[in-house]
Image (cartoon, rainbow, N blue to C red; front, side, top):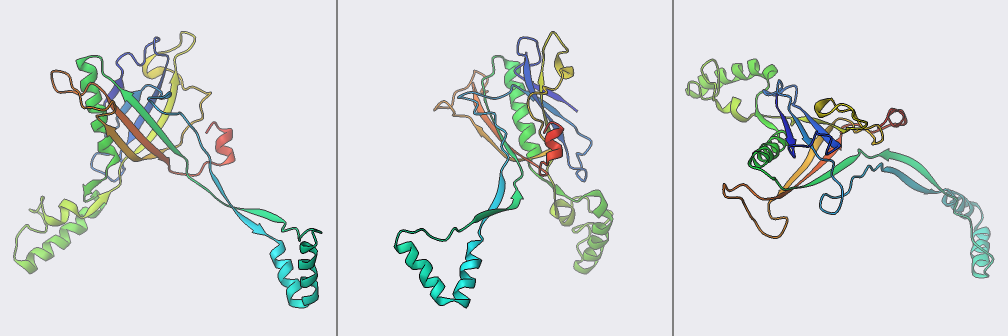
Length: 267
């Protein structure tokens, strides 16, 4: 378990606000015991992009009058002609009576963009680890989950016997076998995001309270992560080769639809 902070004085009273990203590895992965936390400044402004919450709901338009017009056409051709004549005469047309039917609610997405320029060698090293950590846990593991290992060993032993290649497909001696090395994609980690404020001379650091004025975000997956090392038009580094600045952009997607009850509870 490790905590990474950028910039170094982020959780001091001088900064006042920060966001916390807690990484929850997949429960079927080999690294499931690891729980890392990244704390970054709350983005906003021209370089760091907007801070937005969006809720999108899908509705289908239904013109109820279509059924009525169809019925008129089926039972009374003169009535249909009369309706068309009234429209040509400028006397109006049939009210389509458009209604909407609820279809679905989209999962919320949150895009956070950070322009990051380290001010010390320590911050440069911390930034490298932060980017590496987030990229690592956005990706799946490749291997065999523990629950499947006995079955894989049995299959591997049988294939070894058939092919005559001892240990190639697994079994007790085939720890690096073909079956165990890449048979499964183990899901990437999940992420919990919260926003904290240091107010009224209150607690600082990890103990800073959650800001109740920003809606909460449910558990997410990291749908996309981009790292731009030439955000200012060219690649530049310090003497040790570490970049002088970079743009980190992440798109998180909630894992469940937010309901009215969730909104009442602060989401």
